Length: 174
Image 1 (tube, rainbow, N blue to C red):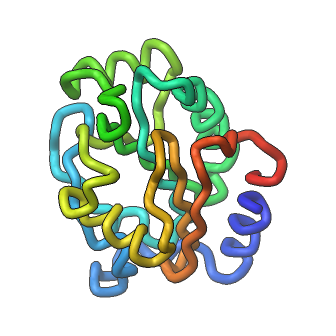
Image 2 (image 1 turned 90 degrees about the vertical axis):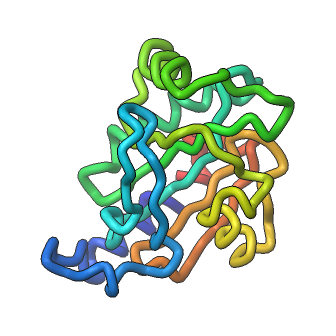
């Protein structure tokens, strides 16, 4: 469960120092994506030592209200080392807005999303997104729809996959 995993990871060593090199970065996080706001390249290695929840998102999906639950998780557990990363994608039914500015405005204005979001990407066509290619290879579970979740432990070694129907606030997930 998410709370226990975050607590256990804190007790077992916490975050590495800022002086640690990217060579210490888990392989699964050795990727760079452009931020949704501003388009500046962001290395995922900045999240090493944190529990990472990667989610493929979409603005026009029946699961879109999960943004609210994801933001609540972010608010509740960020101080304990959880980081949620949103990867907007139109892979399933083309249910994402046309451009990154519209996506950013929608996420913030509709759901108050403050967790890191990245430019629109592919989650199913894994060759187009190296992080998702690695997540699928390591779990054997590709996203079947929007709001599929991958939980990566602090070491980057253990990865769990959760389907779209798993609500972010559901007790078994948390």
